[in-house]
Image 1: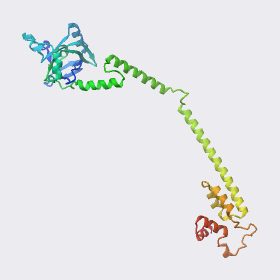
Image 2 (image 1 turned 135 degrees about the horizontal axis):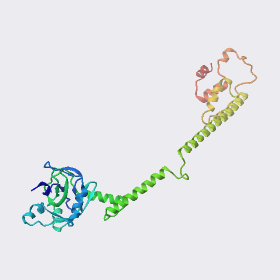
Image 3 (image 1 turned 135 degrees about the vertical axis):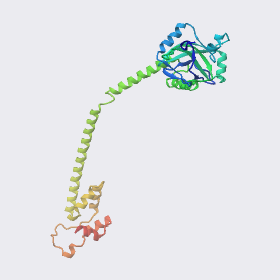
Image 4 (image 1 turned 90 degrees about the vertical axis):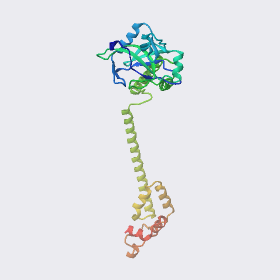
Length: 318
């Protein structure tokens, strides 16, 4: 018999166990596909395969072990395990909707049959699939292709429906509508992000400009505060000198202490409590040389307050 007119049982797919077979079956992969026995075929015109089915005007039989192709021509019984009632193209693949008999459902659930294998006609020169003739339940897989596992697919479908907020009874159209609506909301959100409401957001350039102005103002305020503090420190130092509470030799030290946090207030308390250690009427150089090396009372008071040894203070003074 000419090979082009001989139905070839080639494609084998895994059936689920326990929860029943799927409603839709992948019948022919897209493009070039190869069997375990080394044969290959080409499905580059899937629309013609579907058109051939529709032109036949009747369902495609699902049987056991390709009885339709092997036993029926010899006059032997070839009962149906189910029927392919519709076909469609999905991404270059040919899919068929299956209606199963009770006998087939029981055997599939009991794992008596784990795979299905479509039989098809093809052109011997181009190896192009022309038409499907039947689908057989079998346990002898042929093609090196991913098995169709309804249990995993069913779990994924349930997860997808739950993520979309759809019931488990939702059909493909409902899923497509939900995805389309979700995409529309995403597009709206992206557009809103590109053109935000100016009552709630400001352009980055305006924000940066305002931030820079705030930093400049803060810097100016800080400089003004520093100048104010320096003026107060100079005034307090001058008053302390005038009162003889400190000596000119310790002015720089007291200024540094006043610049510390809370230092000016501490200096004021120190001056208020300290005795006068300098007689403003004393003339410079009136002390004998040996007395000039000794600490005055005010300096000794400072050393006592700060815990500095007098000899170290004297060295720093010199």
